[in-house]
Image 1 (cartoon, one colour):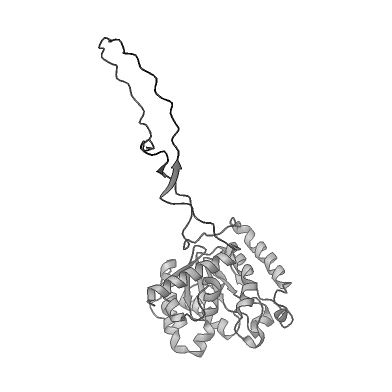
Image 2 (tube, rainbow, N blue to C red; image 1 turned 90 degrees about the horizontal axis):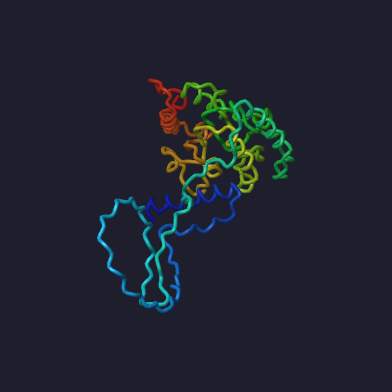
Length: 310
């Protein structure tokens, strides 16, 4: 199969997964877009009555009269008793499968977003959707940062340090992410919002299962809907699978370096900081991704490669 074919399959899977997370179980059959064939039975007319000869009338110059432009008539052939007539049908507002619908909920006022997020975090703290994670966690790890951030980073799951402190990205990988934000992008960590696919630490820091990610998806989607960032930066394949619905066999290298969309938000995929710690050579690629993100955000790129490239 060609790359275009793989890309089409990926987009279909991504869109269907997005619809599933939004609670859509079935899609309505779209109405006919061009024309519908309507069967018309012409009425049986009685025999015409004889018409008397008219009397000659004097010729008069008619006054000019503005006549309305008639609608085009629907013609019925006289030679058949039942005819198929093409009648134009208006195109309904049925979007393409690949159109992102945006958010179904109205925006939360900026002054109320912090309170809404705190309430949601308290709800997550009581969550037992994954009983095996609920009994092994120290605490849930919801999210941190500005509730009005333009940019949201989404990682995989809490580690040991995050589970202990209740904040995302506070270990070694978190320090690298902080450097990417501050030294690389010239922002403050508190200017962005940071969250994870999973709100509980998986035992031994293993990769979250698809079922665990699905159980947490509504919490993450709620965070995104409340903050409404202009940009999402997905850190690693687990985040790309959870947000974009990509195939687990997809290469991260084929996902990064270009823009995706989630709920109408421009979305970029790059390497997880923990991967960069294990593979320092990939920091160059991550820095290129950050520059792409900064350019789209209208941020100045430092003259010397810093942050992710150091």
